[in-house]
Amino acid sequence: MGDILVGTCSWTDRALVGSGWYPVGRRDAEGRLRYYAERFPVVEVDASYYALPSERNSRLWVERTPDGFVFDVKAFSLLTGHPTRSAVMPDGLPPDARDPAVLDAVWARFAEGIAPLRRGGRLGSVLFQFPPWLRAGPAGEAFVEECARRARGWPLAVEFRHPSWWEEGRADATCALLSRCGMAAVGIDMAQSLPSSIPPVTPVTSSRLSVVRFHGRSAAWGTGSKEDRFRHAYGEDELAQWVPRLLRLADRAEEVHVLFNNCCGDAAVRAAELMTGLLGRSVSPRSGSAATRSPGPARTA
Image 1 (tube, rainbow, N blue to C red):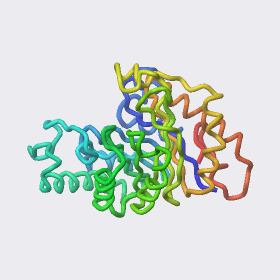
Image 2 (cartoon, rainbow, N blue to C red; image 1 turned 180 degrees about the vertical axis):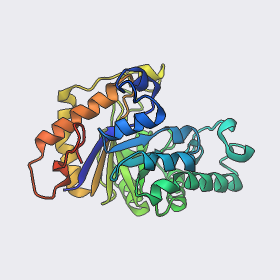
Image 3 (cartoon, rainbow, N blue to C red; image 1 turned 90 degrees about the vertical axis):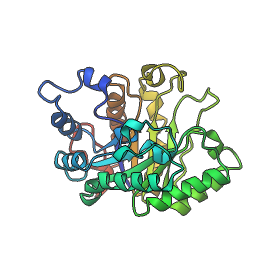
């Protein structure tokens, strides 16, 4: 059985810091990460989507976390086809993804930024969260393949935001594409009442890794403020429905990352703690199984 690592999609979110979850004396940059890593074995770096990651920060993250802790790093916006602000581009380059020289430079800078995580064995995956206008089809497939080519050798995960990729009659081709590219498919939990809703499918396209991201079930997804989009407190019944599915994923992949993105106050960390407890109660003790090693109160690995 593979390892199941449960965590959240940020440890620096302003709402989390303001919620009081971090104790007094652990609220500076170093204290927050060390406190988080004492409780969870994985975290997603969302800041790398908005600005290129720095080599210095990656070195500090390695120093401040224990062996076995991993970071899932979101790919920079320009690399996934999203609009990008000029202010966050390196060396004054224009945010023009159509310019091969610009793309080469940004890919190189991103690689430099995550290099300490790779060297330290702390890179869980690079998450390519593609925009909602990237539809299934020849052009979309070519873009995914180009990303995989440029990121060859990295552990990769893909989250599609357009439902066409997982429509009946298309899902098999999507799985074949990701398998061919060595990319793990990302399963999603979100509200299912919206035109843009992604179905909660959980295909395994990489024997090394499977990822499930819990976005919350707010009907304001895609509209309103961040708090509106992600305001959802998962209940035990909602998470318990996922436990058998996560265990089945762990039977097929070496590692399963379960990440909570309902970043509104402390809702994500509370959901991660709850899921950890549910998984712990659902796994029969077995010698050598990583699913039974729980050195911390909120760690199932």
